[in-house]
Length: 196
Ligand code: ITT
Image (cartoon, rainbow, N blue to C red; front, side, top):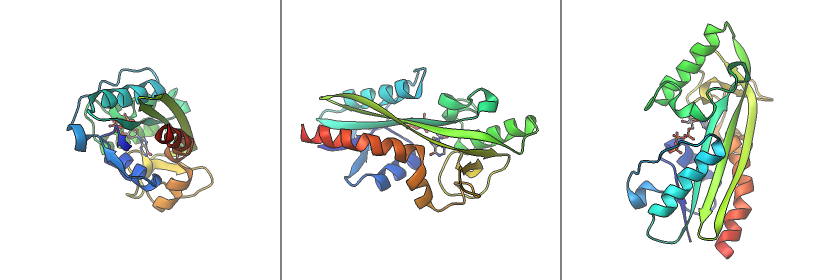
């Protein structure tokens, strides 16, 4: 059965392709671009909204995988959190969001502060709906370093490392990321749904 990714984020598509042994198809290749209204109040609700929207739009049986994720800073009461993609405003680019968060640290006079990424992965098929989570803890810094990864990666140093995810090899992120941890939990669910 087809595995369809309910995301328009190219960074996520690249990471899912690397994590999944089976082929995963970005939904746009099947349905064209769709408007998805992410008005949930949690990562889990938004991941389910995305997966359900694409599941309903497909005209064939499929397992749909969606990811809702973001970075949270306790010093900012958890912001940007579920608003990570639109932190600098609706339609903001990754770079605009990144530099807005760097500015927020500078405004507080902080060189660095604890931060963590959350990923909620929703899996929707005709056999049921599931949501799992993964987290990655570390430090947010007041500058962007490196150009690997995407989004806030150039300002995030994972726990146990001295470099940002923008500087570290892709293999490191693949081993320790919030998305990889959530995907490790989603994998047996997807395999079970494929067998059913
Ligand atoms: P889709 O909804 O189409 O999947 P999106 O980019 O809008 O794409 P989200 O609503 O889940 O996705 O927002 C996630 C944002 O959080 C994303 O735009 C990044 O800025 C940030 N983010 C999430 N995971 C990240 C990661 O692994 N590395 C860097 N930034 C990340």
